[in-house]
Image 1 (tube, one colour):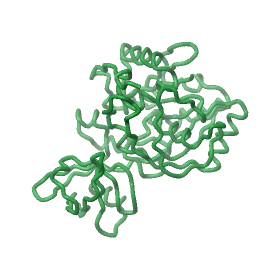
Image 2: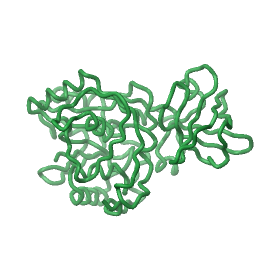
Image 3: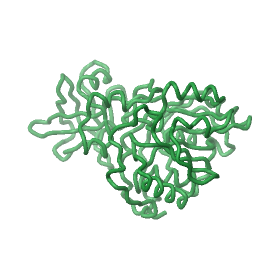
Image 4: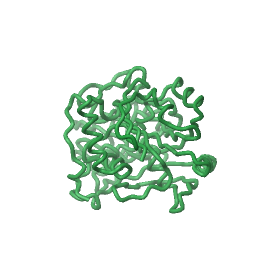
Amino acid sequence: MNVDLFDFTLPPENIALRPAVPRDAARMLVVGADGLQDRVVGDLPAQLRRGDLLVFNDTRVIPAQLAGRRGDARIAATLHKREGPRRWRAFVRNARRLRDGDTIDFGEGVSAVATDRDADGSIALVFAGDEPVELLLARAGRMPLPPYIASRRATDARDADDYQTMFAARPGAVAAPTAALHFTPALMAALDAAGIGHATLTLHVGAGTFLPVKADDTADHRMHAEWGRIDAAVADRLNTVRAAGGRVIAVGTTSLRLIESAAGADGIVRPFAGDTAIFITPGYRFRGIDGLMTNFHLPRSTLFMLVSALMGLDRMRDAYAHAIGQGYRFYSYGDASLLLP
C-alpha cells in the first residue's frame, strides 16, 4: 500500500510533553459499534464486559541513551536491541566519525567498542569491563524519551517514574509500552471488581518503533526485530478466555504484536520466546486479539498502519480527525483510544 495513505497533519500543540495526573484521568476515545465516544481512561471498566481479559507488557525501560566521545568527536547512542551479554545494537548520532574498532568513552567509567555497522545505519556496541551492562547504564545512561518529546524539552527526574508503567518488571526495553502508562492501582481494582481480568507478557520494545517509514510502499519497509516471551500459562489463559466467550484486549501495540506472533491460523495462542518483526497493515487477518487499547500514533508510522488494519483506514482517519479537533493529546504521554472492532 502507498504510505501516503497513512499521512495526516498533527498540530504541534496536540503533542503531549507530560502525562495526565492522575494517570487514569487521561481522555479515551472509544471507537466501536456505536461510533466515536469521548470518555476518560477511568471509564474503562464500563466499556468492557465481565470475562474480558486485558493483556499488558511487563517490560521495563532501561536508561538506554548515552552521550560520549571518541577523541574530539561527540557521539550519542540510543541502544536498540540486546545481542549478547555485553553487546547491544544501537542507533548512533555522528556515526560517520566512527570506524570499526573505535572505543567510545561515555564517562562514569563506561566505554564500548563500536563494530559491525548494519545496512540500516545501526552499530553494535560491545561494553568493556566485567560489570553487568545494567549497572553501567544506571551510571551513564539517561531515560530514552521519544524524539518528539526530547526535541522539545530536556529529560528530567520526573521521567524516571513517568516513563515506566505500573507493570514494569523485566528490564530490557528502550521505549515504554505507553498504553499501559494510563493504569493505576485504583483502576486495576475497579477492573477486578467488574470481573475483567489481566495477564502479562514481555516484549522488549526497541528504538526502531520511532523510525519513520521511508519507503513509498509498505511492501518495501523493513521492520526491526524485538525480543518477546509468552509463557505457557499465559497462552493457556488467553485461549481459555476466548473459548468461554470473553475477549482478549491487548493493552498497547506491543502486546498485540506479540500475541499475533504467537497465534496460529486456528486462533490458538502458543508459548513464544524469540524475536518478532511482524508488520501489520490493512488486509491482515487478526488471530489472537479482539480489541486494542492504545495511544494516538504518528502519521505514516507502522503503528497507525496497525490500528488501520484493525479498524479500517477510513474509520481511523475519521477517529484521528475527531481527536485532533477535540484537542486530544497524542503520542507517548498522550491520551488513549479503545478500539473494539
